[in-house]
Image (cartoon, rainbow, N blue to C red):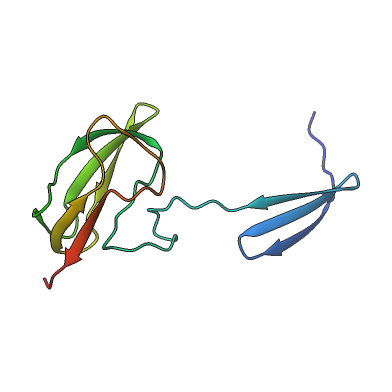
Length: 115
């Protein structure tokens, strides 16, 4: 059965702390590195999730426009695309198909150019 319990809490930026039964529990907001709210560098797109790189769709020298799919990562039977956030040219690709990418891992480096 559910019940209502009152706890003291404190919010500080992306953290919230609860005082419970003489202990303090602190929870911190975790943002995926590729999420809109996370600080990101459009010249160095990153894997938004940890998973298997199933496709790499660019090579060094490839021209990309904003929205171009750079790579596809599979995690828990779901595919997540990593897309270019700017127009530019790929200078270096850091992943190959079949490798395990960790969330936040740089997929490639892009040299930005005008639209």
